Image 1: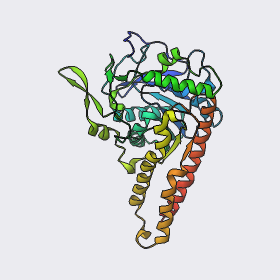
Image 2: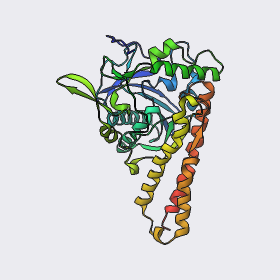
Image 3: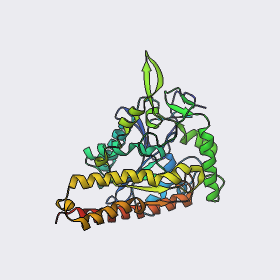
Length: 369
């Protein structure tokens, strides 16, 4: 069922800030870390607030969430950003049904830049994208760069890049009272996976069903979903129109040269088989095309005559998707629960170092000297 309409917002959790940025609502959670290290910016997937990264519900444990381990074990600052959504108890009173992926990127980049300036942080971020959050890659990176913020690496947590057709066609999409999209039955699928993550962690419930349905789960602006549907109004009547090309234009993932280095943390379980089986290949394409764009832009003078050097560069490009990919046991919520959250944080640090090493090797090969 779609969430019911409410007339006032409930209190935000400890440390959260509800704001309006770039003419759309956003829920912000910031945890300070080592100001000399990159800030971890976490973007949630479809139907979810960014609380899935940091928790905060009554009876919940901080150590069951990724933010805690990024902060505690690795001293990374954390920034969780929730896009406009409609939850069971209204959180964001100003609806934004026409909110686009470009809006998403611009808004989240602006909040990130503001946080960096307010707290005197290094102007470098690690972008963590979960599920639908993978679609924000180019808009966030491009907008952040204009604000003087560099994305050193973007990491997929069971995320899908903004390439239309990677996700299977969906049917039965409905419109909520706020003009957002939802699908009956999605909540039960998510809850089942969360229950399995609880069992993996040996506890009754990482997030109890009532708290999950009330504080974490909601409806989503349809333009963000990657379903090929776009929000439209005909004579004042809202509706969803099929427009796959509009989806492609919105995510702009094919602007390869504008993308940062990308890495992947994959789940392992069959319940999330699309990501367990497909993410290395999907993001491998994005990474390879980005490296090809880097090669073309640098256009080293040796590329037409030094065949041995080109072979080394080619081999690095071949190896890159495997070197920048790893797994954490679990399903679509593999980073939720103490064990999965802690392991995901460890894997992230390993991937950041792997990106640094790979980038150094690539630049050395591209040097004309």
